[in-house]
Image 1: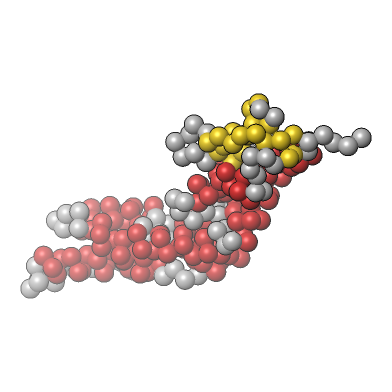
Image 2: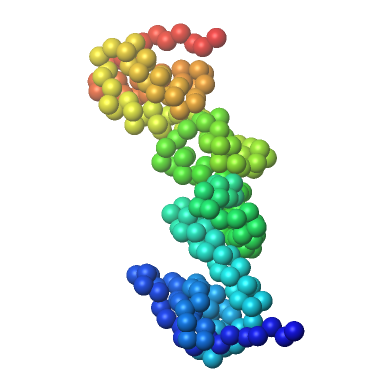
Length: 229
């Protein structure tokens, strides 16, 4: 038996301020709503004839578009890893099948690439919030990035340079009246950012020397500091 078709008798913009969806009326009655992207892609208009099978496919296309829209919004704030994006879409209630389709499309249009994401994360940390290779690697691992990609990204981090830059900023807030207090506070600060003892020790000596020379240029205020084992 031939599948009877329904006719689109009206397409009305939804009440959302963004008006991303429209209400579809079949045979004079409201039937369902669709994302405007789906309507445009399927070239739907008043007068179009739809079978029950075509309506079913439109519903699936709408679910896929909603999932893709959620991903676009999530990615609009900053780059994300594939694992982050999958988890976000799952929390939003999208089905696994739709999530897989969305991830495939995002990869195709190069909005998701874990190598690019790892590079972004490393550059962001290095520029604004320096951390050690170890800490940056841990952060990327928590975001679901594969080990080989992490290894490549963090290998470009110079721990000595990162420690020096973050220590220089922190040291400006510390008193120079007591070296041991200065060392303890700055050392703890660097340790929390993942730097090892050797890097911390060398950084403290360098920064102390520079800061005390700035304060009293004619005086050598560098104390004798025990070398690390």
